[in-house]
Image (cartoon, rainbow, N blue to C red):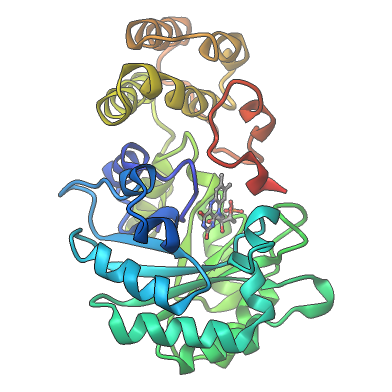
Length: 338
Ligand SMILES: Cc1cc2nc3c(=O)[nH]c(=O)nc-3n(C[C@H](O)[C@H](O)[C@H](O)COP(=O)(O)O)c2cc1C
């Protein structure tokens, strides 16, 4: 499934993932409190379409009352799963006791899960990290509490909060969660390829897996996973025609959703991800951050198509160029990465 990614997992991005077979996608985290205040920017994060299903909505919060109220607000929307964020490492969030900070308050976390389970009309999942820091790895205990509180599944990102996105996700933690609970366990962390997906399944026994950075500029990963599992063969990477066709469609959806100016600005980061690993990508990325109109962006995508000989493979994303997001790129929360 497609992982929640604040500032990234919007409707256009989710639709591109679904086009290639992503079976379930999540919104980025949405503050329950902001939802209750009917904050217009927050409500925009809930935009969806009939093709965007099944959809998981991820809530961020620490007050049972706001979570309950947020579910009432969500009654006006169509969705299929509600997820509670106990994983976000951002200082601004953790300082308020939300996100990964909930790992330090197991009782409160149980209460929040129980509240969601009592009031939600859809399955409830919870996303956690392996612990707050290396000295307090407690995913196993936390997951057991989450299961006892009635959650339908738990997703474990195998890094601690203090690890941020550095180092490697630890499969042992995910395996120990799997051994401790009978609800489905979803693995997250470093799933950049079919091979990584198979490895985490083998090493942890997880029931499902979430792709996050591996899907940036690379919606084909979902086709590769589906085909690898269905036929036991890994299909080739997209041709340059397919790559640039998908870029054009993503741009169109982005402009449709955000308007011309913002749609293009928002698409710039995706341009960078889509061209990561392309031989000539380096020549185009600096231009992409200067483009302001849909016509200019379409022109640049055409240039990319003409510059590359058809059929060349587009390598899978691995470590992703977050540095490229700094500066003019509108990431809702660059601090997320620290
Ligand atoms: C830009 C970005 C935004 C993210 N936003 C969220 C979020 O809103 N909620 C959440 O639970 N995790 C969020 N994550 C974490 C991912 O869902 C995932 O657990 C993490 O990136 C590990 O997977 P990976 O190593 O395959 O990228 C975010 C990650 C990135 C890179």
